[in-house]
Length: 262
Image (cartoon, rainbow, N blue to C red; front, side, top):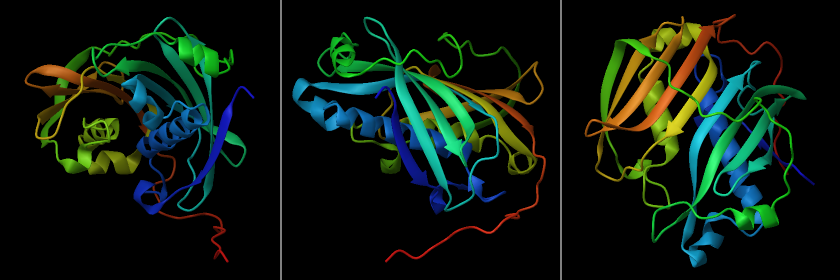
């Protein structure tokens, strides 16, 4: 089997409070959880790599959102596959389904990192253990170029706390994404939905580090860049493109199938 599939239900913490639907940002977490489960089936989960003094690092994530995401408690399906492997680079493409329709799709670039050298190691074991599926969710894999900023929109600071730290003892990439999302004013998020998301992780940060997130407008309407810096150097670059919501009413327009489990 060339693809790995995992189903999830939208939990309360991952709900968009404006429409009661899955937050687009949270969709990335379901993808990453599915990827972790996939690596576990191949004996290459994070805990498997400890003995080899290695760990996984994601360098880029690109996503398009096409349809409305599921409501709270509803089921979504993540389908992912290894789409391309070079000497060092490992590309994972994915689709997210709701009611048998693709509601989001994307690709991601990963590396295996040596704890000793803090540099990528050869991807030979990935080639040996994983099947390659020559299907590209977003077309040819290209390095995303952050759009040119035209003016500063908002700016906030954040000091990393224990809630930001993952088992590798550095800041979880979810925290960077949340920080970028926080810079979008509430009124804007009430009337707009995320259409495209591009993330490039440049450098690790740690407990106690102070980060500055600078959000800029670009020449394209509803497109923004979110540059997260530590000591003036970028640690994560994010670009988002939004569109106006078709319906801003907080109404579920059909009955949710919420059952008790025996």
